[in-house]
Length: 128
Length: 288
Image (tube, helix red, strand yellow):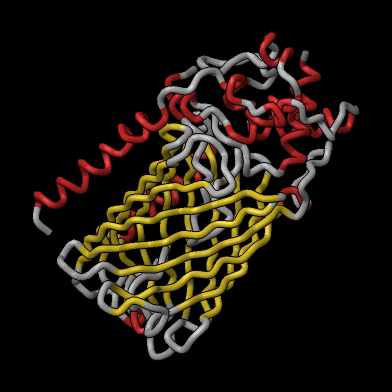
């Protein structure tokens, strides 16, 4: 394979992230993006001790490595005992878990089944 | 060559979990060939091995391994390095080459169908049998290639990954285009997958072998010919059930018996894989 072609391929692979960044730019805070119907959705896993415990188990498994075992936040990963989480509706939190905020480093958790995302929301709400 | 590589793989697999505090996240892909739109969490490193074993008629039984290092660069960008090796009965064991792939989510929100662009460069021996995709007119005759074959394949591969998560199911479709940079025509392939956890709800109790930690599904993959002979004929196609077990603590095991769907396909393949997720590796190395 000619070296020039290989160099062009490697440059293209390196340049793509820049393109993706430009696609990603321009959104505001995640809460402003939540559609009204998602914001109003009630949590079908309303608070019960067993659901909070299940949510905590999911949190320790999927979230604690970034947000801390007590959800206290770590480095650039936010403290989840915050007013923003306290004031968010369950629907907003479930929307954030499903969509993530990829530009800001929060991954999408759509691979968790929806009932498990609601269990996580139940746990998050119990923190505050 | 294979001895130092084997030693390196063993050290990485055995010492990794001891050096780093246990991870807790789980592996991204429920499949062996098909990709979904799930990306590695940013800052996490997944170390794993995907293996395939088969005993081709008229050839020697082989075990091909692809050792993978998958890193979440950003929430929308995952980069992965594969080191391929293979052991063939009555022949030899050897390092067959490497692959470097990058996956980019094209849309930042979750949609009904989520597109991901996949770019790969690979530099492998012509005898490599790790079968991470089927393209062009790949057939079971390719499994008869001897390990001492000297041909090197330098290839670029593009995939468009379309993936959806619906009611607990993941449904993924990959369209593959591969180009041998030595001047051969574009080759095409496909992969389709569907999988679902056995339980959509988490229990409150700690459990290891329980429904919520198991997923089951199937994938189908095969070739689509090449630029001048596009189509489903004269190439191989496989259907493979997949079972995944996510052990709390970060280890994931996968099994998949694969069945050839036509006379160009190897009648039976057995795949197995294990992976281990190291959470926030950069922070750990910095001591944060």
